[in-house]
Length: 116
Length: 116
Image (cartoon, rainbow over all chains, first blue to last red; front, side, top):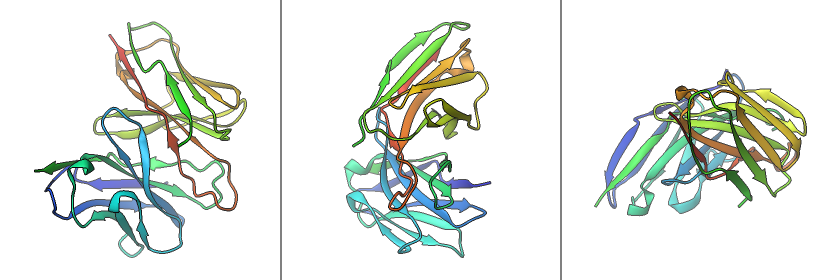
């Protein structure tokens, strides 16, 4: 069974500092991995996705993530935090590449706070 | 963005009453999902649909039923609401499998349900 662990339910960083949100996954087959962002009172929207092409994935708003198979990790980073990055971030895993009935399993989320 | 509309957006009801949440999509996506979001649990899959009249259970399906009579509509019903079903409910959709499909989910803006 697939699963995702997000380390740290709350992360605070100063404006302009590095953002690092951690995600480790467990999957019996090569996974597809996603990061979603949720702003207050909104649904989730896709930040970026890993689908077995390049291991370093660039997403929207300056975020990127690196797939490391040896560490079963897919950490999300941004070099310089902006106040608008304050939100909740979810890592998700999907097994298989056929995208038929595969389901996404989400982590418990990390709330990112930006300190002015 | 996929056109996904959830209704109602907010509802307060009493224990034991039936509740139906509606998800309407305009993108002709084959797959539709209902998730609930609770603090500390992230998003958990309730039920999903892989076509008209084709549905299956997710990880937290007890106390919920679904129906999909048309491609565009996916209904979630709580036959007899309980306080433990107080939550924010999200509908999501995904295109069908095949080349170029990377499994991205598109989310509605959520329905906040309070069961007193």
